[in-house]
Length: 374
Image (cartoon, rainbow, N blue to C red; front, top):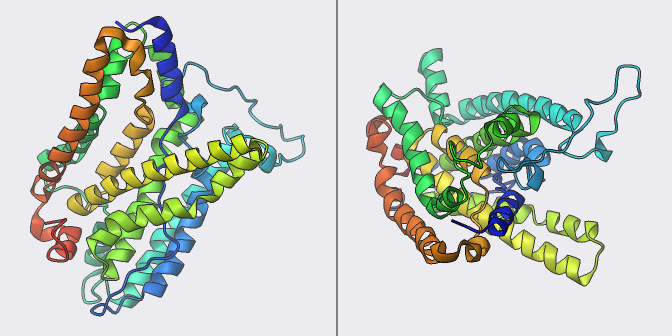
């Protein structure tokens, strides 16, 4: 069993670093000679569809320690001003203030309504949606491009839910073992059901584990991939390009951290390290989520994986030293999880498990473009 001090540090570290998973691309550097779909249209669509989501959630909606699901303290806020008080200046409020969260929820809801309407119009005029189909057939085709479709049977629906979660669970084999040794898993001594329910039901929990993953994956996975795929871009561009470009576009937050910490040399080094770390982690998850979306042609898996990773946080190996005789086993668990995840990635994302290959929109689009999808 781990030492007490190690358990405390472990919780604090796991709570301090959470997943920044919103990728966008205001420009897409893809080229094609066979498609009439305009890449310049992609740029304008990308910018308009991603602007608000980036503003609302990019400040690290899962990267703050106080919102971690394993955290045992949640900041308390008043419920905002009464109707007799002057309006609140949300620019001066913390992002976890209920007023700020509710206002951003409204903006996200509006974005999720307007972006599909814009893409419907864009795909209609560009010929992506066949004009000779009935309205319902066109609507079904459009939704399938956005990864919104009902699996053909219950078995495949279960696969959309269980298999992606199983894959990321393998990846987190080391952290799960650390939680087990610290008695922090459900039904263990240190797991507090009341605290966890409060995190999940509160505004911060709803933002981090429901609204954030769904809105980000829909905008930055479904909508962005739908546009780029129609431009004729290879799956390499879609998988490795979009998440990386989005991460680079948000390097300005490193400067904000530098200013906030006093513009000192130490502040610069700290901001630089944090920025590089976030860029790498965002890109890694983005690669996996985009690959999963292309293989399954459904948004269910990426959303669930996003939420799961938000709950777990970034795997922290620095606290393994506190686990005494279990230390070597933990290192082995971390390494084994990474290896097994890599080995299982391709077979467990086989489109046959999730739907009919012939009717899978992105399976058809990417077939033959590059062997990374085949």
